[in-house]
Length: 342
Image 1 (cartoon, helix red, strand yellow):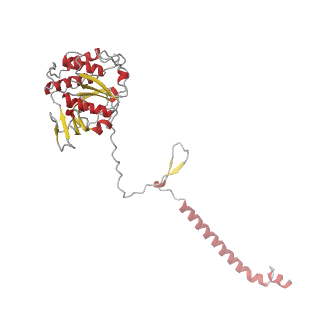
Image 2 (spheres, helix red, strand yellow):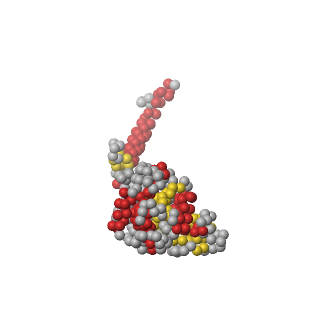
Image 3 (tube, rainbow, N blue to C red):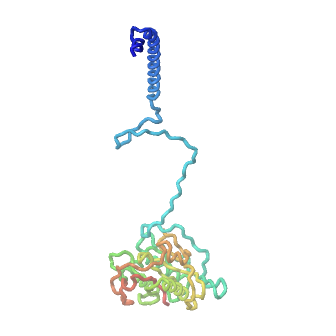
């Protein structure tokens, strides 16, 4: 081992040979390190270049930190169009606007006539006369008075009752006179507006035949809608007089002047018929129901303004001197009409 040590010692011949080579290697090593350092600096400078404006960080309010905002990418997709909103009919009431789509059926005749064979005959009858209608406007509490006035006008124009003393008129002053009479001869509390079916009936009899006890019209309550609707048709067919119907749970009055049925002719007294529809007039002009043909389904289940519904008012508390009934007991939960019986 002593020979190897001598070769490697600083004084040995091998050291003399290796010293220049070691210096050259050292220079090459230092050059490589310097080049690598330059590459690292260049790479860091590239990475740390300024962020484009499209991805600049933006502050998000309330979060206290920055969130990068990503630039929007344009697309060729078409703009989305919102689907149209369905229009909802407003709830019924004095201030409500009723269903604006009402049409008057073109069929209007003053006599019953079948339109098919005996077994499936269709009978159409309508008393309506355009001269007869008195709109309650501008008095929104006068639906029963305007209906009474229009019903009496209709009877006068058809000439169906020679005992009628009423002279046709659409005077607003007469309407208000009828309303005052109703309110003085009703069984409803005075603080409630308008009139109840007792007052409506009394005005028809007094103005039409001269006495509240004339008995031409009466108020009737039916336990089922089927009974009530057939009573409406039967009364029109038999006596050729309009029938008043109480709607909106007792809050409004309308009247029926005609019908369309299938089966037996109602004017014969037979009840073997099926109601297809009725001809209805609403005294509130804004409603736009003037001799409008209403299908049975729409009359019973359609828009609340037209629906023939049970009576729910409880403010008729006095006993009626004509029939001895207390309205809230007589009518509550039933279908109420003011019908001719002569």
